[in-house]
Amino acid sequence: MNQRLSRRELLQLVGRSGLAAGLGAAVATHPAQSNAFTGSVIKDGVVQSTATCPTVVNGEVIQPQRKLTLLDQTDVLVVGGGSAGVAAAIAARRAGAQVTLVERYNHFGGLWTGGLVLIVIGHLVSGPKQVCMGIGEEMMRRLEKFEGGIMNRGPGNSPTVDAEALKFVMLDMIEEAGVKVFLHCWGVDAVMDGNAVCGAVFESKSGRQAILAKTVIDATGDGDVFAAAGAEFEHRTYNIGLVSRIGNLDKVDRERAKQNPKPPRGLGSATPIPGVNWVNMLGPETDGLDVSVLTRMEMNHRRFIWESLQKMRQTPGYEKVSLLETGPQLGVRITRALAGVKTLTADDVNKGARYPDVVAVGGFTKPERDEWHIPYGTLVPKKVDNLLASGRCISAAIKTADNIRLIPVCFATGHAAGVAAAVAAKDGCTPREVEVPKVQAILRQQEAYLG
Ligand SMILES: Cc1cc2nc3c(=O)[nH]c(=O)nc-3n(C[C@H](O)[C@H](O)[C@H](O)COP(=O)(O)OP(=O)(O)OC[C@H]3O[C@@H](n4cnc5c(N)ncnc54)[C@H](O)[C@@H]3O)c2cc1C
Image (tube, rainbow, N blue to C red):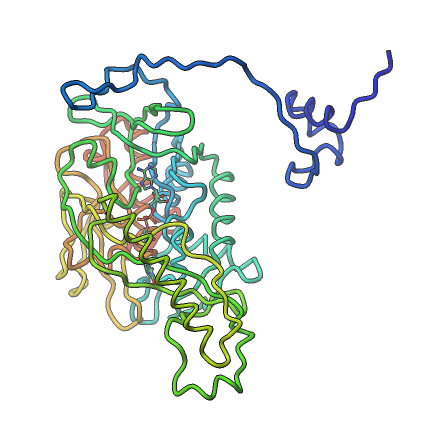
């Protein structure tokens, strides 16, 4: 019988058999461009076992012992896909390791993109010279290829990125490097072998699963993995804000605006998109590890942003300004800091410290001072093995927090952790035993600046 397939049936068939590439442009179209909904039953009558559900015993909720399914097994596991985690994953992969990157949200970039923190500062020293290079610098170079991807590049400048362009660039670099990725996957525990980490546990729509790895990089910003692994840390409070973007600034009526003695508050700073500004927020100092606090911050900040915008629209000339978006990620700056083999001090930053085991270099917002060096020991926990920290939670005194947490410094320490983890996995040693000159040589090959 000569039965013609409908477009829907054909798409289903192609989707299941993976033949799309061979069937020409019409069926190779991305699903987003198709106009037909499709759906099918995978299995009916499904009832999950409750054998491992927690029960209440003497008023306490008790979780029974349970076996976890293995989601993956790899050389280097990176938990957290922010500026540090993405740089770490790409660096480790380019250094020859198998790498799996896990992120709790739906995009890469962490606070840099999801937090709408768009301006890159802290990479400049006198010269003017840029000291945070390597994979983060490559991201910014790639952004230049897109109209509206990045602005204010150039010697002595602090560039501002477009979050969506950067999410794309990161995705592109991750896929190009061959990093395996799991999104929508929240790291909730460490898998331990005595004092050594050998993986992490994740919660997702697929349930509670484990990934095993030779080396684990904590790039969660909050040190979720090193805390779970029993590594010593400092628990800190810091300002929590919520960044937003406002639009239609190109529609401000300049003549009417002249009636105001001064411009309204909260206009923010320019972005690469004409008429769109990003608006930073300091917010109160509080505990970013307390879920009740996080909830209150989100709700208070959203109300404040909305009400501030309504006030701005009552200002002559500014009636058309609109709120484009509030940051999908709350602006948590500092929570846990690792107690590492070495701890960076305020003196190190202010006096431009140099270390033989330098793996990353930091600068300042203005190119007026000397560079300062970050030693490898700030990434290595005092006691726990097979684990490295990166980004805003490395071992550094609280007085250095406003240097260590800046985006370029985070991508530089992520880059360093990625290379060190790859070397440890390849040499069959712990990160503590890694030959630092080997790490430095690969970092330089990968165009990092180490002084
Ligand atoms: C309001 C605000 C303004 C700022 N202003 C500037 C500025 O002007 N310029 C500048 O350079 N820097 C600024 N910063 C600092 C900078 O944005 C961040 O410190 C930096 O981006 C942190 O990078 P990171 O990769 O270490 O952490 P994050 O960006 O926090 O990335 C961590 C990633 O890990 C994921 N994650 C967390 N926990 C888990 C888990 N358990 N399992 C799986 N995934 C997890 C997160 O979703 C996130 O993607 C600002 C920060 C804030 C909050």
